Every structure is written in C-alpha cells, then in structure tokens.
Amino acid sequence: AQKVTQAQTEISVVEKEDVTLDCVYETRDTTYYLFWYKQPPSGELVFLIRRNSFDEQNEISGRYSWNFQKSTSSFNFTITASQVVDSAVYFCALKETGTYKYIFGTGTRLKVLA
Amino acid sequence: DTAVSQTPKYLVTQMGNDKSIKCEQNLGHDTMYWYKQDSKKFLKIMFSYNNKELIINETVPNRFSPKSPDKAHLNLHINSLELGDSAVYFCASSQLREADTQYFGPGTRLTVL
Image (tube, chains in turn green, yellow):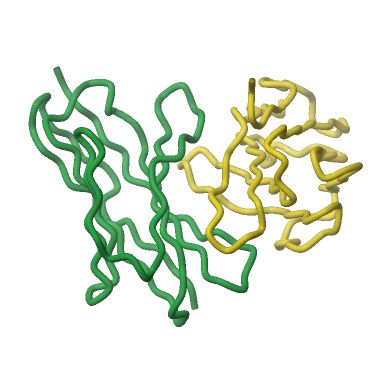
C-alpha cells in the first residue's frame, strides 16, 4: 500500500538556523515519483520539487536541498539559513506509476521565528 | 497568466443550500482533481477527471457531484450543504504522463453556517 509519513507535526526554529523536514514513504512499486509542496499562510499550494525513483542524486536550489535515499525510503527536505518567509506547512507526496493518485503526507508546519 | 483558477475564493452559505465551485486550467493538462483540506490541513482527494472521464471517485457523499464540460474545466457541485462540509477545496491539474507534476488552484474556502 502507498503511504507517506511526515512524523514532525510542527517545528519551530530561530531565523538563520538550518532545519530538516522528514518524509518517509511506502510503496511496492519500483517506479514512482516524489514531490514537495509548500503552503504558506496565504493558503496556496506551491510546487517545490519532483523526483523520480531512478534519480537518487541530491538536489540543491538556493537555500533548499533535498536528500532522496531509496534504502531508507526517505525524501528529506532541508532549508539552510531559514528565514521568516519560510514559515509554512510543507507537504511531501508520492505518486506511483500506473495510478492516478497522489498520496500526500499530513504536512509539517514550520515556524521560523525572527 | 493564472495556471489554475478557482471561483469563488470564499463561499459562506447556510446549511441545506446548494453551491458550486468552478475550476479552470490553462496549462493544457488532461487531468483535473478536487481535494478537500480540513482544518488540520489534511489533504484528501475527492475526484479526478481525465479528458472529461471520471477516473477517481473516493468515498465522498453523493451530495458532491463533479462535472467536467471539457478538459480545461472541472466544477464541483454540492447539494444540501452540511456543517462538516466547511473546508478549503482545492482544484489541481496535471498531464497524465507518469512524471507530471500536479499544480494547484488558490483554493476555495467554504464556510457552512
């Protein structure tokens, strides 16, 4: 069965700290896709990254980086030198090939304090 | 320029009323979705249409009826609204190739009084 677990319900950090948001997934498929979305206080859902199961290279985009490890079924997201504007709920999602559904985790609320 | 748009953004109504939420995407995608996000931020898929054909129909009360007049539009009609229907409803679209990303509309906050 497909499942996405974001065990951290809420994280608070002080500005400029680094923070890692965990995402653990379950799938029987060998080909699948993983996503991260950001939901700021304004409410929209913003796409951040997509990763396919064949590509285990880590990715960096500015202060954001993602660590994909198939061996531990994890796709963690790190924000370096966090800023107040990073405060949001972050969702991890999984899509298996051959299905139409995207399975979302329950989200992690990140609060960055000035 | 808006990729996925929804109207209205806010909807306040009385219990028992019928209401509709409209969604349009200009991304040329062939698949559209409706999600419900409750007060705890949990995202639950409700429906999905691919080229106007219903492909996902989760366990949703039959008071909810999606309609897709063409592949760029997916509307959600809700009959006999109940207090528990209060939530944010998101429309999303994607291209049904395996790797494609789902893009979301801005959401419609429905409040049933």
